[in-house]
Image (cartoon, rainbow, N blue to C red):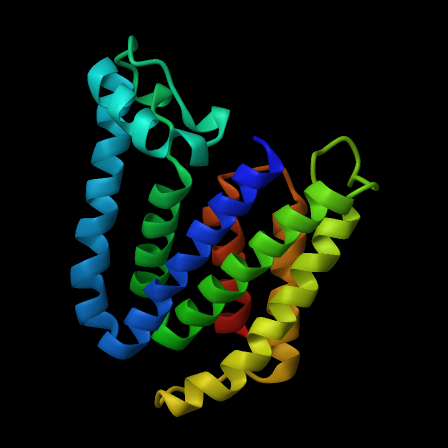
Length: 208
């Protein structure tokens, strides 16, 4: 994907920060009423575009420039394994799972630091990344950007969460969550990083 297209993609992803903001304002039950149907709808669209050439062409025409090659699957196969979730689908599914599994402030913090950290890692890594982690595509420079952006996000949440009536994690716990998330982001597997990284961050925030 060209760098300019990556910029547009990450700008769109940052709009997903409205999800944790909405969850914080609505509270857990009402947030789930919105997120679960949204996630199911997105999953249904991904299944349909893997089964229907016509629907796949429509999605490609509208969203194609913002989607990576590995987010497409052949529409000729009926195997569930050929369904490819796109970034928007993973985002909705992940936010729904975080709100379902964890307290709202944990879900909000984990999702927010991931979205901002991931955008920083992708943009810095692609433009200035020189040193990779082993044979994988992730770079040391991208990981450093993730940590810096994640810590900046935590600093904002230290003020924002109490203002919304929630407790904020301590600096030590939050820094540990950022470090764990950065490590998980640098790994190529298992699971999609849009799911893996926020879950790791949330687990650290919750357990600690």
